[in-house]
Image (cartoon, rainbow, N blue to C red; front, side):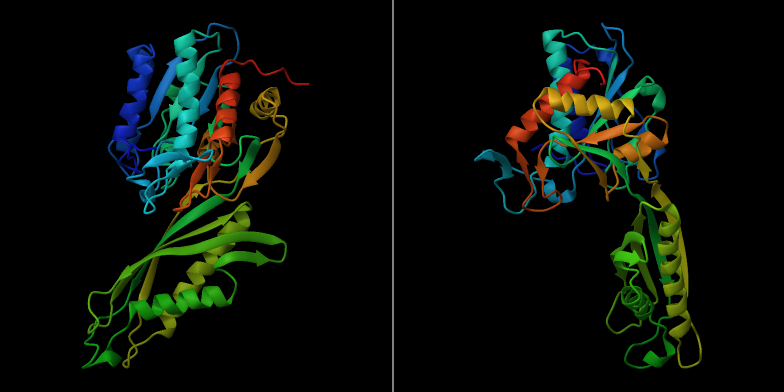
Length: 379
């Protein structure tokens, strides 16, 4: 947790994990770093870390994964154990339990197998990068490096008995508002304020129920304008504003309705805000699918294996569907059905973030059970 590694800057944590694997006896040839940071539009300093081990028992290959990047709030974390919880000793930082808890769970499984020479099926351990900025590592991972796993398990949040079998889908939007500059004191009426256009559009979205938690009849979703940049001086009518926004829903058609509502609101606002001589602004909207929603069948082999492993360590599993995106979204979309498990993280992305030590230890036992294929067979 103390090793810095925000999205696009994961080089130090990737090297720290690789070093531990080498010291535990992993062959250098089994450890790869793929070139995802060169292929993805977000770039970055390092790609996904992959460890592939041949099996010594006959069974389908299994994948264990957990992303290594943290949100910027966690840079400089000083983790300490306090009354059964890992917390940050520095009140100005998060602790990085999301997702260094998951990172450590699968690292523990790999190190235990290597150091004890435990029997196991063919295994792939994957530590993706850039999850927090759009599931980039999973989206662009080289499938050839993964070895065609048949069962896949992802660790990323919640209690260890939580079995996340599905997650929402999301669009991200970049909205560029063009106005017309003018002196704000001498001739404000000749300007077209890009800020006013953006403000009017956002107000309309809020008023009409298309911003925040969205409920329309029996359809549900969320949206958020998260970033606004624009303007250079108080004495100039702002002629350019750029916004970043998102729309989420488990229903792809309803998600597109949310995006359409954003497009209408901004285009309508651009038509309403005019200069004294009738000049209007204009709006450009770029949108892209961040990740598509998915839901696994409850009889999917990775789901039944995860639930049986939980029962093996004395926990009763329960199923959930996430309103956030997961690396499992893209692995599943790319043909590798992936279930997501927790390891005791609480309050991620906040200063009050913490990790429950007992839950983390249960997650380690579950991961080792799955890595060694020692869970009971399906009933």
